[in-house]
Structures are given as C-alpha cells and as structure tokens.
Image (cartoon, rainbow, N blue to C red; front, side, top):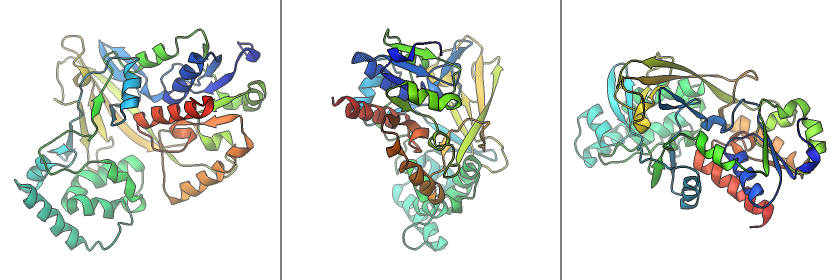
Length: 376
C-alpha cells in the first residue's frame, strides 16, 4: 500500500463520474479520500485524449444531455461546454436516413410530407402487425411507436447487434429512450441542455480531483485485496460490478461490452457527420464516429474515425451496458439484499447499481449519495 490507510476517511473505488464526484464533494467537506482505479487513467468511460488536436472519446461517443439544471450547472463548474447537438445519420445498406425518428425520416422512408400522413402510415403498420395491448418486448414496442418499415430497417439489426440477442427477447423500455417526433427536427435528444466539453471530458476529472485532500492510485484493482481494503478503511464507495463485489455468489449478471477501432485519415472531412449508425445486421459495427465534427478542433487536413463493435462480455473485458431483463433483475435483487451486510460501503454508478444510467443520471445519483452521507 503506497499510502498510510489510517490517514483517510474514505476509499473510493473507481475514478469515473460517480466516484470522482463523491471524492470531490467529500474533500470539499474536509474529508481525506483515497481513490483507487484499476485503469491507468481517471474519468472512467468518459476518458478523452488528444490525437492530432482532436478530442477522441476513447470509450465511445459521450454527448452530455439533460433537463436537470442542477447537474448541468455542476458539470459546467469544471469545463466549458460547446453547443454540440447530436444529429445522427443512419445507413441501411447504403440508404441514408435521419435519426431520431422525425418527419425527415418519415419522408425519406415513405415520401409523406405531413404529420397526419406519417401518423396514418404508422397506425396502418401497427394494425397490420396485430399488436394488441401493452407491448411485450422491444420489437412490439418499436412497431407500436414507428411502424414495421422503420423497425425493420433502422432498429432491428442495430439493436440485435448492440445487445447480442433477438429484439423479441429484449425489454420494451430500451427503445423508449429514443424520441419520436412529428416535426422536421434531427436533434437526437429532447433535453434542454446539451454539449460536449471544449477540452474533453478528462479535464472535468482532472479539476475535480486536484485537491490536497485527494490521493489517487491508478492500476490498482480493489477486488484483488477486497478484504484488506474493507478492513483498513472506515468507509468505502464502490463503483465496480456489484456481482464481482459479492464474488458472484448469486451468479453472474450479464453485461454487453464494446471494442473500438480508430483510424487516422489525411482529410478534413471523411463521412460528413459526427455519428453514422449502421443499422443493417451484416455490418459488424454499430456506428462510426468522426471526432472532429463534435467540436471542430483538429490539425488541418486530419481526421480520426472510430468504429464501435459490440461484443459479448466476459471477465476479461470491460463491462459497459447492464442487460436489465427479467433474469438479471432477479439476480441483481439477490445482490441488493446483501448490501445491508456492508453498512460502511456505498454502492454507486452504472455497475454498482446495475442500471443503464446516462451521464447526467450518474452525476445526479452521486450528488444524492453525497447529500445522504453528509446530510447537506
């Protein structure tokens, strides 16, 4: 152990948004905090680094979007955000469509020009699909929302690649994250506050953790010495996988993982958009990001593109997305009942809470944990 553990009030496991926020707030209150992080950097999956003057999101595209003014104001204390609005293009076997589903999409798909025409087309296809009552799965939910044509071309292949299972096996709530609107509006999100940090996300964490009350140990895996850490520190904030914390005693929770391939191009503009989704089943990647379009910062004549490949998770890979289906929800509930046995441990973050949090939700959950811990 590099540091004298008796100096610290808190051990924070993980330097992502939940852990860093808690550490920052605890340090502000005069508490001494040690952060341990198994990776070689802070910022978790929000980690960004410069390549040819371009802010590359190492673990996939992250666009901050929220209606929570408290959270928006909070993150803006640590970084300046630009006004980036995510306007995704979908490529289905060479056919291009605007996302999310809006009047541009409906015109491209069906040639309809008014909301009434679009709604009539969707209703016609919903009726033809014979869906009655509450949608039972993602496929039925998608067809109910936007019809069979759009489901088949723009949702089915992409979603099944992303989650590694049939759309009929996925819960309906997943597709509800995507807006459907009957205006010519390509804004991917409905939220009032949107953008990406001008100098990348890592800046937020560097500023948060720049405190004499915070020490950081990188390349340190909590689980290899879990019992020692729990014995040595009075309070622990744990943001890793909850099933791993409990030694998989109730079985493994399922996650999806992702791998990334980046390539440099000697060009100012390769694909003409920040994000292009590949929605057919045959293309092995789900989307391609051209990072210079997120903030228009780069060296002249250079662009970096990253392809995102979803993959099955195993313990050798990073866990990105909880699979919140019925089976996993039951397993998670079993672990939740074990938490009371560790009153000095705070579980948080996407992995610690086994929830598909957006960024703003993770920051909000961390601030709530701070209020509960310090009563202010």
